[in-house]
Image 1 (cartoon, rainbow, N blue to C red):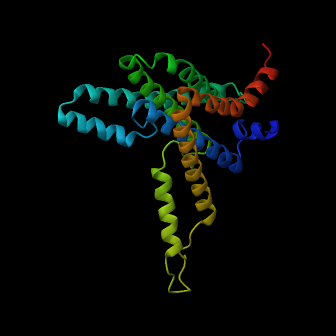
Image 2 (cartoon, helix red, strand yellow; image 1 turned 30 degrees about the horizontal axis):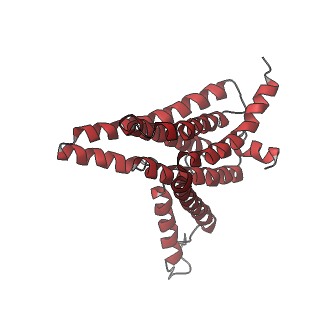
Length: 247
């Protein structure tokens, strides 16, 4: 992957094409982490809708321990997003090239730790299960906040509900019959946006397949390639900062 291309993907200077390409790459990572994580902890961690609903169900059924676990997952996702905002604003105030790369580096480190330590701790389910869910939710919150901030909330990567909704809206526009050819404005689908949304959805699905099969075959070690991808995406702007600020 050419250095200048990586620099455009995660550097401070943003372009719409770079946002789309980075979004597709991160959707793959999110899909893999979400599907592989489900095989590890029997819970999806990339979206809060199900977790909040599960908490309500658990409270209604009197399963307060399970409700507390859901609350912990929710707070971890929230903390991940907040951590991203802190890191981005810290870097932005200091005019660092790596304002968006630093959260991705942190996610890579957490994935690496999860992959290395997970297999050793797997036998201690009572400790590992809540900790794993918390860690995965924190990473998903972190990643979702990164792409949200750099794309001005135009791209999401960790959950597909909004993407499928937007695809449905554009499909409805495409199927709409403009009976009056003189009517203004005409109802027309944004085919460029549909291609972007479709690419994000496909990337998430392919990542989910890779994550599920990877975890099934090699267990927690399947997270190591994902960490490597994130590290590759983050490293160039970070090295730019190190070169320009040797102290």
